[in-house]
Image: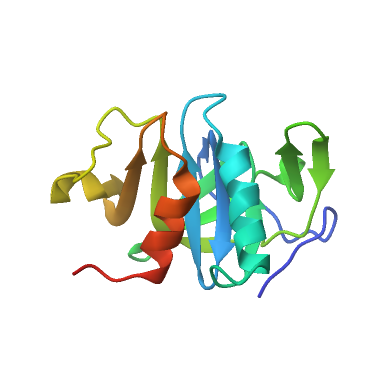
Length: 159
């Protein structure tokens, strides 16, 4: 796995910047989107902790708060914003430094505070398109904790 440091020269912008967080879980990234204050950083940290606890595969931060997306073949690659690489906000502790992956392929999108979140969502709401690439999606309502949904999506198969 590629890991970066803040001055190893391996980071570049790599595409447009978006307000989101991303965590590499196993071989793919979970891209976490949502309005300010919706819990993107919290879910990113929770996923890292879930990886440490063995609930999901090893999980490492890609980027928090702002990431860069780019099309690579028929996949979407995510990279940390260089100025924020290796930094994550932890409510109650502030900005903390941690290991990070310099890039990962987006395999799942989580939309926090999603208006289309439902108990039994229609199939069309469980996918999204980024730069023309279709990616599985989890819409999460404001009043539901996102971690159990993400862990379920990463560890189960559709029946």
